[in-house]
Image 1: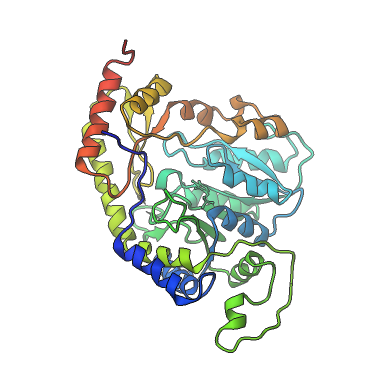
Image 2: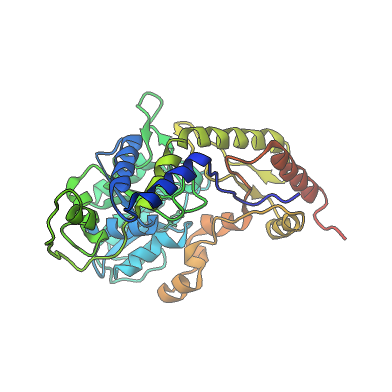
Length: 400
Ligand SMILES: *Cc1c(COP(=O)(O)O)cnc(C)c1O
């Protein structure tokens, strides 16, 4: 048997929606993008949403919109995907890495407070020597779909006038609350801007795509303008419905818009988001039951006051992670690792002179991480096969 790490869930309805766009005469940003923005904004309870070409584009434009400029400092977790930090570099700013919480693997609020304090007082912080530019923003990541300690992180950010842009690439749909009596809130609610991903293996997909949501209309306007060459009107508004031919270029922007082809798939996937999440939840529960007695593994948990999207099922091995991945590969089981910490990647390590000892939790935990296959259309037989091969690999770690 072969079990891939991920297989996208595509229905006939998804296909029909995309084909309808192909027949409609309008392929790029237009009515489906507008409809997708409206529906997604409603799903996360945000007043504004801007559909974009990727979550990376959303992060880039969000940081630009909240005022990140060359020389600024932006705080990002040490354990994240390349996109979270590369957009900081793209704006001429400096990423400052913050260690993660050992239980959730999300940015640790105490580590954030300590880092900000050191930077404020001109002391070296997380490997970065003074002099430092101004501190501008924090970009937490909701690892695997469990929302970070948003309340704790926001207290630190608000105390120092920092903007909060949340990397919600894993966190749709996901909820959190600030204690058992507080109301549930969607991931990203209350951030200056929240950025979602519809990459092929995310919880809903448009092939490639992303969304920026915000309660601040001026940020939504800036993101929209910058997503299309800094132009005052997009092509749909110029050519359809008696629009004007003329436009103004208000800034040197980017080409980060979503197509209507992608948005049509997004609308169809959004309609199934809750159902697909229930499937992932059931699979995660089954993994938990089947693997809870396995001493060599630590399993991911859903902390109190969190409802995970279950984007990942990332287990931690007590030892022998690399051998386990290789053994599973030989048996036809795909896995992934999220991620080698960015301060340990050659570019960040060499450019900023970073050392892994500065990020003890990320440096220790990443070596134990392996993400198991988890996708809505995974069959019971596929999951049983993964569990059996995993148990067998752990029982005899060194086959002849
Ligand atoms: C996937 C991912 C991104 C980038 O999303 P794209 O839509 O591919 O640009 C950003 N951050 C994290 C944490 C991700 O996992």
